[in-house]
Length: 393
Image (cartoon, rainbow, N blue to C red; front, side, top):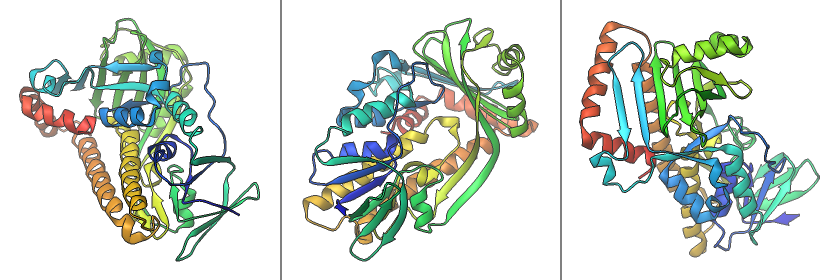
C-alpha cells in the first residue's frame, strides 16, 4: 500500500494547481487522473478568462511561464450591452479609476488545454508528487485516515483526499455529500469564429430576452471564442444547421458589431446547471472547483473560482503542516469551508440575479436595466469596485 499525506482525485486545472501550490511543503501528494493531457495542434474552443489573482497563482507555481505567449490573449476592455436597448456599460483599463489599479490588461483569454498542460509539466517534476494514471474504485474513511483502491489494483492511504474531479465528482458521490442544483434551462454553445473587423482586445457580451452571447478575443485580431447561452432546442438547431445559416444567425444576434462572423471550429454544446455542494469539507474529505460548485458562464468566473478554492485550501494546509496538525481533521478544514462556501454563494447569487434581471423583455425591466447600467457606467468608483471583484483583488 502506498501512503501519502494528500490524495488529489482529478488532474484537471484546479487539482493540479493545488499540488503546485504545495511544492515547497513537506506534503507528500498522490494525484489520480485517468489520462495525461495532450496538446491538440488546433485552436481549442474551450477557453477561460484568467483574472489577475489566477495569473499570479500560475506565476507562483511556475506554470504561467510555460504557457506559449501566442496562446495568451490579453484584453484591456469589456463592453456589455442589451439588444434593442440603451443599457450599456464599458470597462477600460485606461479609465482613470481603473488605471489606478495599475493593470496592463483586465485579463487573458487562454485555451484550457494550454493551462492544464503547463501545470502538468511543472507539477510532474515536483519531488513531493506522484501522478498515477488510473481511476478510483473504492473510498473508505476512518478516524485516522482515508483509503482508496484504484482500477489498476493499487491501494493508497492518506490523511486527506481532495475531490477535484469535476461537476459529476466521484469523491462527492462516494462521500454522500448532498448537492443543491438548479437547471438554468439554457445550453452553452461554444466555438471559434472569424470576424471581418478587429476585436481590438475587447471582450464583448450582449444580453437579449432569450440568450446571452459573449465574444472573447483571441490572439489573432480577427478571431474570437464565443459562448452562447441559449434555450436547449435553439442551441441544438444552431449546431445542426449549415455554416452559412449559423454565420448569419450569429452575426444578427451580435448586432453586427464586428461584421460578418465565420465559423472556424466545431460547434459544441453543454447543458448549464448551477450546482452547490452542501459540504465543501468533511472529516478527511475536501471539495474544490466544479466538484464543489458550478455557475453560469456569463461572467467567465468558473475556473477563477476553482483556482481561488485551491489557493485557500493550499494556504490552510501549509499552515497546518508547519505546526504539525492533522490536515484531514474536519476541525482544521472548517475555515477553508466557511471562506469558500461564502464566496461561492455570493457568486452564484450574483449570476442568478444578473440572469433574472436580463431575462424577458418586460418594458419596466428594460427601463430598470437601462437606467441601472447607464448610472453604473458613469460612476468611476463603482466601475473600479466591479473590476476589483472580477480580477480577484
